Length: 188
Image (cartoon, rainbow, N blue to C red):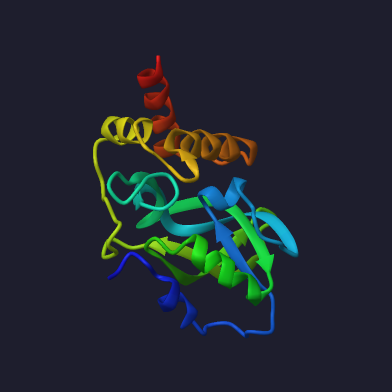
């Protein structure tokens, strides 16, 4: 599959185009909110783990030297905390462009921190997209992040802002926090 997923995402028709839709953010959508929304609520999804396995050719790296950003990997007993935004369907034009580097819209069940549920959308970069980098030892991932930058800034800022945002939301993520620790060791 091509890394540019804008046209594929425009074909998604799982939701009424006239009704607001929940969008789940688990990476930069938690802390870099550059779109209007109707509501913002802490939420989580089940059976997915957040991993720095997706290449970023357009934000935190370049086509010749991609950075690493998060995607979700299916994992039976996992749960991933983040933020859900209730948006109007017109906001998908901006979000599809923002998430164009390999991410596909996927319908998912959200669980809000108060225990209520809703169906929503999450952007996931699967391993068959052209920008997928895949697993690596976490120290190597941290080194890769430390040495990458792109039009949106240093890749290390993405990691540290995500880790800080997860702490503020009281969500644990061992993968993110270990990478943050390794990044600090590299930077010393």
